[in-house]
Image (cartoon, rainbow, N blue to C red; front, side, top):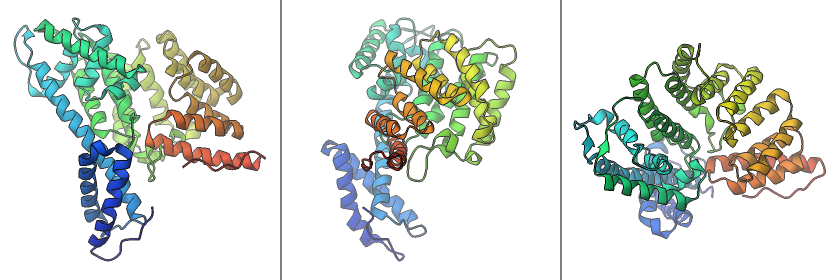
Length: 424
């Protein structure tokens, strides 16, 4: 797939040669029904090549074009989805509001966020509807975030829309803190999807992350003394600050321990730490404030070896209590912290118990594979990395898992294990 290297000031002939190959790759990947979008994506990739190649020609031009076109395709799909969802959003906002009055365009999105969570909508439909109308997420993305079947999510959204249409009047929120828990939950899920995109590449949805932060700033401006709101804003800033170091040049996910911390956005980190310095003293432990404190401990460590895993483990144990041990993802993160603070083998045993209770928990195979690798149990790690590859839809995570699988295959072969090559 390398193709010839573009040379000279005018590689137009090479572009004409590679364009149909690039289009064929996209149509194979996304289906002939998406031919028009694939063609548009290839044209945008060629424009990028026209701008960049004369000064910085790639060593693998076909691979460069395919990767760029895939990213452009995802951008086009997201843009089309968000255009259609803006129309849905406007239709919802056109409904009469109890109490009269109108909102400014600046706070329309935040108002819609509150309206979608209004009491007349069944609680089971509030979060899916809001993620659809405000965040612009598709049904598959929402289903992945909420760990629900796609048909269930689609039905809940449809029922919620029907309830709103039937009501004819939406009760306008009277105070900034009305429906606040649901609002914060949606904003939290938005940043989660932005940094762990459900499908394909790129692995980071910059537009979605920016919108989540923008809306959280609005909530914080309306509720400046709410410590959980401050905690959520700090958490979003700390999460977004690591984005420049999370993805490698090959598109693979870079784990926290391997990231170049000099690439983290210090302005975001400093803002988040100032928020926490004001919010934490005397505060009751809350869901978002606790997670922000954990993220802050990572941000304050100059290198992975300096990370205060004992304190992180203590905070995760408190977080388990706050969530009444009903959130297996919190338990999974607590086990990772325990592995770092107290040892790998007890953590692996704890992980196996969690797996019996939640066999389909996302990220569990990947976490188990990494802990097995750290414990030197390479043959077991190989099988678990393969399991993790089967369960992920993220291109960036897949690249990372393939790299770790290859390393463990080599280590296993050195230990007398199998020498089967890693899957492509």
